[in-house]
Image (cartoon, rainbow, N blue to C red; front, side, top):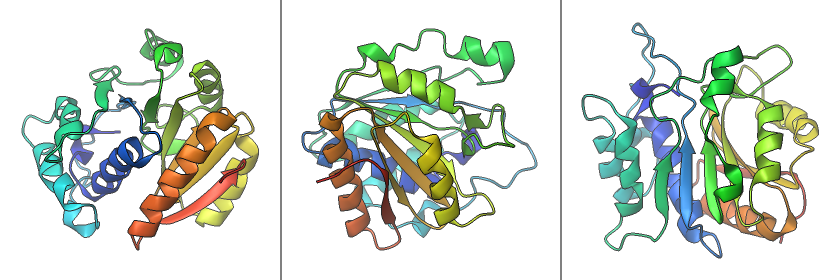
Length: 237
């Protein structure tokens, strides 16, 4: 992700959905770990200029989104997500490598230093690459690698889930999801909540979390008319 994206329409979908999953899953998640996978901002880019009012997120999320636009831009404001309701939820928010760029090659390997998934019990771990999952022709800083996710998902406790941001390329969602079904063979269950341009793919490595993420993401889609929901692989309730 880029800091210039903070507080825009894509963030409205992102943080509203993640808050929903943490609090509406049954049982809920104790913590959310945000892995921003930062890349440098582009000075001439207009990204991040679409108002969050364009997305029908829940009302109490909007002050939080406005706070993300504070200057200088900083990921530190994201830690306030848990306190967006009158009665703050119980989940904790932490950030991994909030000031480091993901890079490629050696720099990419160094980025993951200190990331310990096995210690993240009952956690929602959110990976936020610029573009989403790698494809056959797209590798580098803007994508998360399947080899990385396979490694991390294997190490996550059975009570935890990984979620990945996916931007829609110049393809239909059905075509992209069809490819993902084959590439996500390392996940026991994978479900997607998506709208016209963005998707969030939740993955569980075992049966104990698949019902939780399926029900939570489906519940969010049912409550938001612009959001769709689909099962990519695995079983569900």
